[in-house]
Image (cartoon, rainbow, N blue to C red):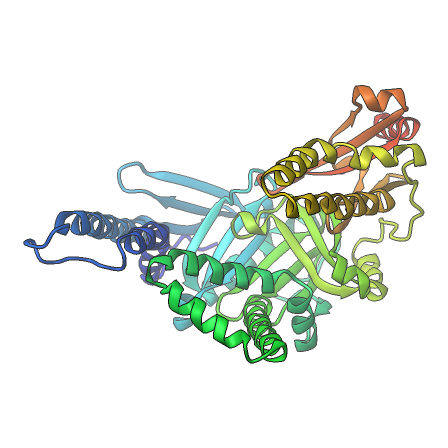
Length: 492
């Protein structure tokens, strides 16, 4: 195995510099907007120092980030030795990390704009011990040939270990067999954007920008123009509102298209490889033995049309905190979802009959809401009488949502598998095996105890922290059954 030392590509210094600048953008924009979009460069003008000091601080921190990026690039060295990927970095404090190839669980790739310009890739190395969400090593920018070399060396060592243990494997120089599991079409991307909350996010973003620009907006002129506009009739106003929502929808489709372009799931050697992205291409590897739980998420609109999102709770990391929960299928028909899942995870049962909360548990879903609803209703009715009395109508949607939660909640036990179904707004189906459960807790309030009602919560490892699922207000006997099921032997 070669012991030649390798450096990262020089563009990694620029990438680290740009990452640092991202942290300064929001503070600088806030200062710039708060100052009325004015920066004075004349020392004689009033407010010169108030304007120039933040700019000087911003420039100084930027220079620090630039030198930091250069130092990280210059000191970072990696090489292969004794069946290990070895990394050393640091200027004043030298750090070394030796990563055995047979311990590497996944190599995650990311190609940003700078990477794609120079045909480079960022490689994140994860091992079986990477349970805190932090990778063992990050190679910020290396050539794709170098990334392939790392993957080749990892596969070769693992195959040697398998052969020594008596397992039959293919030769190290052969490419592994790929099995395409799922690929999103352009139609799927449009449907994904339409049934997501992207439109609301776009409108909220526009509202936030307008709020920051409030001092520059001539509200009196806008009010006069809007008033005169309403004179044209309801139809014109309706068309304008529709056009605004249509534009927001187009923006949300564009955002979805950029994020999920060429979304593909491939199975390869007991692992899943998920690739996506247009401007920033990502490839995340999920070892099948690191999957902790499967979660189906159905918002009301997708549930209405028979679609769901499938999320993998994995002990692997990904790229940043937003990738701890890895989306396996962003949008897929419930009629089609079970076939690929059965192929990937044959140990799970997907079609199960749920045990629901008893009828006596129904009031427990909405009775707490009156504690926060009543003060709001009383305040609105007193200060905004008589229109404030209409705040009583808030009770109707709240009770309907809680009743919906009651109808959705349930659980099922099949062998070593537990299925929990619950709802906040979206309906969530949480499927986990007994040996993946990190903790289980049964909760019962004084009022629940009187009616023999209790709630159950399970926690599994996922990324930096655990993720939980909860089924509320079940029959007390049922929660005890679930607790006994977990306690029953790990020796069986």
